[in-house]
Length: 189
Image (cartoon, rainbow, N blue to C red):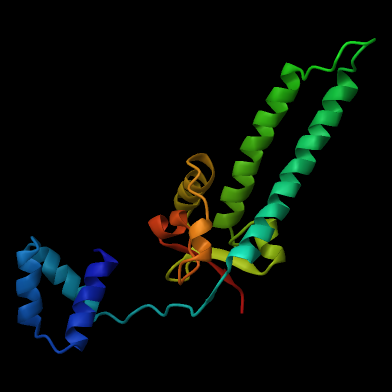
């Protein structure tokens, strides 16, 4: 059941509306009796404790990302040196990157994707750069991200270029990708 509907029931109860009035509104919204019963069962169950957190600001996140990019850059530079060592230019010809270098870049890019996706979904809850700054990525409920959400987060952030400028301007310091996936980047307390 959608957490927003559960919250709707709880909020309306706190505001003093009767269950009958709330049920009437839910029926008008197109919910059937079984869905309404499930919704009220969830609303009656104790709420999960949500962790209080301090959102990670734009600059902390940006510097943590720069560390991760520097890490990737180090690997790419190393791959370039290896390629030149294995395929040295001869005479006065200019160096032309080999197919091997392209393959290395491709594999390193896949490696970076795995690095970010798996570390974000792991008990670290973030990359090395985030960890160095005491930042973690989790759901709004304070739970570790499932791998599927971590993959979607990576895809939205890097592949579709939904970047993080919103981090500087939103109350919870969330990027567009965080808002879509209901994730937060926070400072450890």
